[in-house]
Image (cartoon, rainbow, N blue to C red; front, top):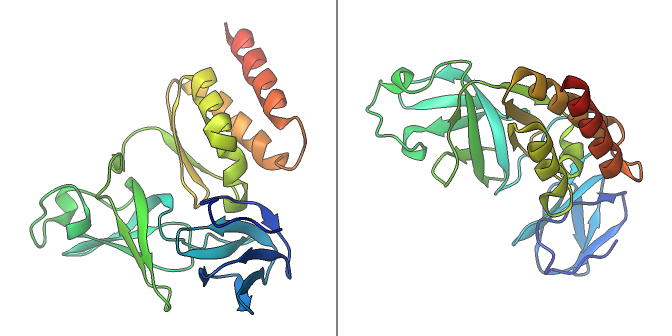
Length: 230
């Protein structure tokens, strides 16, 4: 499944041995390079980045990729950082220098506590799987209220849809605020009935991700459930 270098951030299902690119890019996790070509080494979702190509496995936990937006949960608080669970096998410390507030040493608990939900960006993943995350970008913040649900990370592209079409429809039809993390965590906030409709629609997308006509089916469900509640 050859893809040109110009198609950044594309995601498609690949199988071991698939040709991913003829490229000078770095062969990331789930891939291998041979003769200037990059091949898939596992079944998963192809992910193209400006400097690398990787394959995220269809099953299992989220494998962080630099540049991904993720929904995390604070699980520990230190004097100069917070430890964030991003649904990955690897720990993700968030340093005080990577948040939008001025935090003095030892004052971290004044800003975020264990259990808080945050919208973050993966800024680096090194060879030892040490992950650097940040809230220093537009829109990244602590998420208050609402609820978090989880889907398989491999189904995230389907929830978002082509050019964001699916997630935009979900927002429009439910009047909910929705943030989708590449790590499979989705934060939803709005009226309770609308949150329930959004959750049901997202679970439908996850269960039927590979079916044709899914967009129309989800739209029909949202319209009918809206009329039912009227």
